[in-house]
Length: 144
Image (cartoon, rainbow, N blue to C red; front, side, top):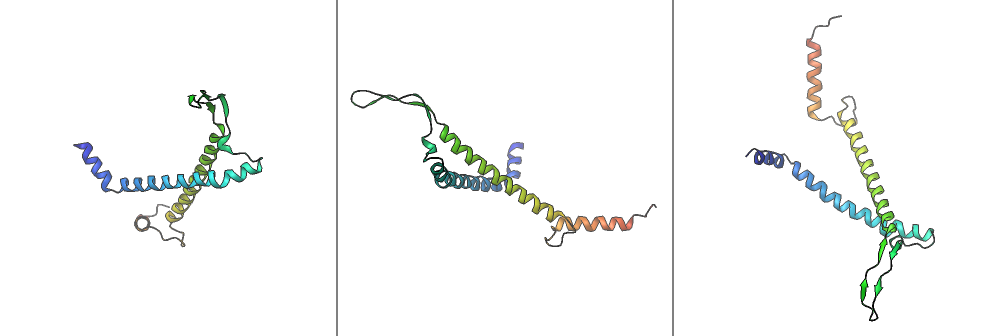
């Protein structure tokens, strides 16, 4: 029963919806970055490096074997390091973008929490806490 109650509180607070939205946006962003790397960045990079197609770069450990009719008997065994390079670039772009977004949100949050900052409206809870602090300072006798 306690578990169900905790789950209801979690779902009602909106955390579940925020998490779902984050996952959906993250999935879409991942597809976008993958397309950026695969379709836009890698072709010119491969062209500059001598018309290399990174997805074709591999080290073949065993060639595929076919019988006299052309039917596949054994599949090729290879180390596909070109795909790894492409996915590494994907990862670096996603990691860098997430870093920049988090840095931006942290800067905005610090600015919003600064009560002396006039360009960003201070949240009501911080304004109220500031007013309470100031009132308490006024009421406390100065021990100097």
